Amino acid sequence: MKIVVVDPGKNEVKSFCFSNNGTLELVNSFPSKTEEIIEERFLEEDSSLRQYRLELNGHYYMVGEGVDTTYNTELTKNTLHHKLCIYATIADFVTEPDEEILLVLGYPSTDFQNNFRREDYQRLIYGDKDGFIEFVQNGEPVSFQLANVIVLPEGQAMLPRMTEVDDYYSLYVLDIGGQNVNFREFDNKGNAKNAFSIDVAGVNFLERALEAELRRAIENPNVNFRGIDYNQAILEGKITDIGAIEGFSDSTSFITHVVQNFVKKEIMDELSVRGYNINARGQHIIFTGGGSLLLQPYIEDLLKGNKTNLIFSKSAKWDNCLSYTIKAFQDQFTSNEQFTGFIKPIYSELMRNNFADFYKGVNQGASQEQDDTMDFNRIL
Image (cartoon, rainbow, N blue to C red; front, side, top):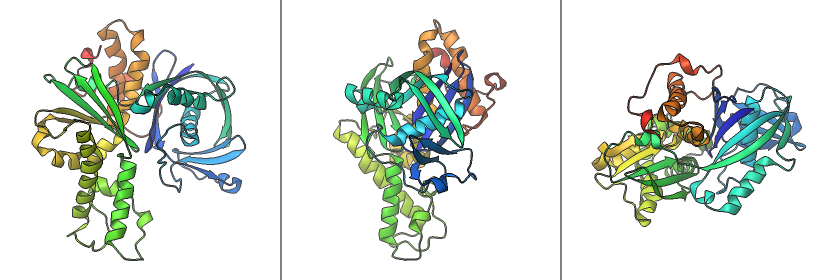
């Protein structure tokens, strides 16, 4: 049996694959994009390692890289889109027919509290054949048996990162994803006090806002707005070869203006309405999720009065997978030492590969690298 841990995000799908004894074997991620296509296009084979061609129930789909659609913006994860993404990443890990899989999945914090939605999500993934799943991926038949589908809330189990903060009254964790921002509050003993999701505040919606504002500022019919990589533009703080942008000295000032306005309106103001001021001096905040890496310089500038109390997780992209792994395995250990011996090499392996998108041949014992800010002995 294999244990597959999946963070089925709205921007990226991230996953770990463990052997039955808890050894990390494979790591994978790909863009959270799907598209139903006609069979003729499906037969094209010049695809990357992060692109998948699925034939499921008589329909043909492209999943991952190179899919010519926008990101899925439905507010729920109970969709065919997420089912396809989850099946695609499991198939990448399956090595024999009918292989048994224990599946661990993430789900938005707010929806997790709704038993009907959560159980509907489990049934969607489990299928109508008692967990037996079969389809064709990249021209090869795939089949596996889901032994169980465990659903866990996003943005939880941040205890490894929380060890970086030694003295605090309360701690906020903001998980910035593609669709939403998950917020959790902890007391000074690590107990969760509150949790909720802020919908349409993720980076997929920021990219849409950036494109819309750019279209308003540039009335040039020769600009290919859809061809711009807005994610890369936010990361680099500029848009190359765009020309003059009305009202701004250059593309850098334009991007800074749009991004910070979005963060303030969609995240900070929404938190403030709910009684949480993340700009309060002395408030400790951990930022995680792939979106936090993208927005770090913009957030630090907005919250510069409290900058010394902001922590941006180095492993932000993988933190949900790490947290689901912690929850899935922690009952197997009776001491901090046993648990540390399990989880620390996983983190070191991710560091050694520079938190890469995809790689095989994982060797947890090959790296002695450490993130010295994290005290794994304090997790349990």
